[in-house]
Image (cartoon, rainbow, N blue to C red; front, side, top):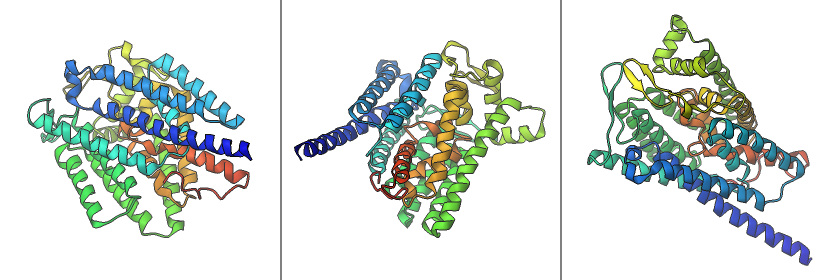
Length: 402
């Protein structure tokens, strides 16, 4: 009896400590990641690049500590080690950390509540959004203003690009929805309307604005439809994700500026196909990625000189940066999670994964854990599936991540 009590006490202490460490790691990593999207990075005396590098290392070490605290079945342990080795090789080869950190967050997320994560993310984004906008308006940091194809001015409100402003506005709406369990009240529609106005009228980001509309429609369908229809909608999103992965790869490899088909899509997506094809032609896709820090990635498009790596398709970016081996593993796990999540009662747990599955085609940030923290659903579903297979409970009945 004493042994059972001690084991139970140990598990309780470990669970509580691990959760708190996880939330701290998420705050550190996501705050520094989003801050990198602002023009505060141009203030050299703030040393934000160095702070970001340190934040990634600290977050990774905290998550590894969580993994060492917990006890895992042998098959799960070997899965974590195998994925860890694959990601580590990719980091050494490419210098790209974010996929490895995403896997660390996912596998150390046992017992983490999505509602708490969404609150941390929402208020974090809001603080940075307001602070950046105010700083740009008083002239403390630069407010980038670019003309679009029609000559209309796109504002960044202190972010590194107008599209980045739209990305953070969209992330705010997504976190707000998760925080409120996907409900659709009149006051919630006001929040989404403000987000749409920022994306459409200030940032002039058509893709973010249209994705936000799809997001709101999806939530309305999920809240006002029978379970069977909701299941089919979620399954549809899973297969749309799979289609977009393959379609992105095809467009990246076979893009032809003389083809009317490719030209129409490329123009509608502000050159996204041309960018990904350009970097594919120059550097190719490697098994464990490529380090773009060692090469000149500048590219001129419609008279604008882009000096940083610009690949707004998240699938192409991950393949080129992290390599095809870790990327395809990640795409497979993402797809299977979406597919199986259709059977879950609390499908809003996967809400972020669903909407970013579509946004990934046009927004490179969509697979960053700092935005798409709903990816903890991958591990949650894995654990629930194990319990289902050994008959401990039905699939997705636990509320441990709500």
